[in-house]
Amino acid sequence: MDSTNITAAPDTPTPIVVRGDSAAGIHQAREAVRAFTARLHPPPDQAVTDTLALVVCELVTNALRHGGGRYTLELSADPHTLTAAVSDPSPALPCGRPPDLTGYGGGFGWHVIRRLTSHLAITHSPGTGKTIRIRLPR
Image (cartoon, rainbow, N blue to C red; front, side, top):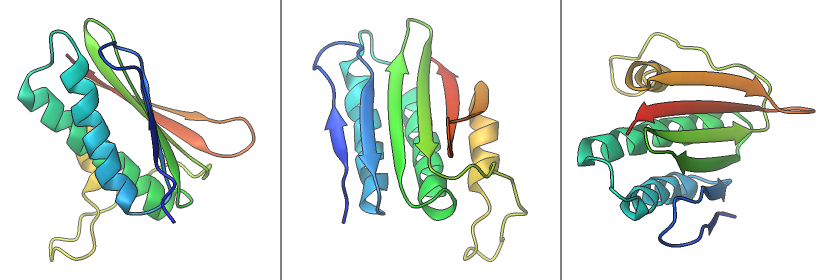
C-alpha cells in the first residue's frame, strides 16, 4: 500500500516532503519536484527542473529497491540552489556498480546521480538509516 503524503504551503519556498513505500511513490516524487519548482519565483530553467526530477527519481528508486522499501523526500531551495534529501531505513551506503548494457539489470542510477549533482552528501540517521542530500545550481 502506498502511503505517499505531500505537504507544503502554496506559493512559498517552504520545503516540501513526500513519503512513499511503493513504486507509485516514484511518480509522486517526480510530480512533487515539478510542483515545487513551479512555485519558486523565479522558477528554475526547465533543464534544471528536468535534471532535479531525474536525480530525485533515481534516489527514490534506489531507496525503494536497495534502502528498505520506503523513503522520505524533502525538497528545498534558496536563491542559488535546489536541494533534495532522500532518507531510507537502510544504513548501507550506496555503491556504483557496472551498468548492465543489455538494458535489463540497471546499474546506471548512482552514476547518473553523481554526474548530475553539484554537491552530494550522505549522513547516517540516528539509529538506522541514511539520508542522501544533493544540490543543483538554480
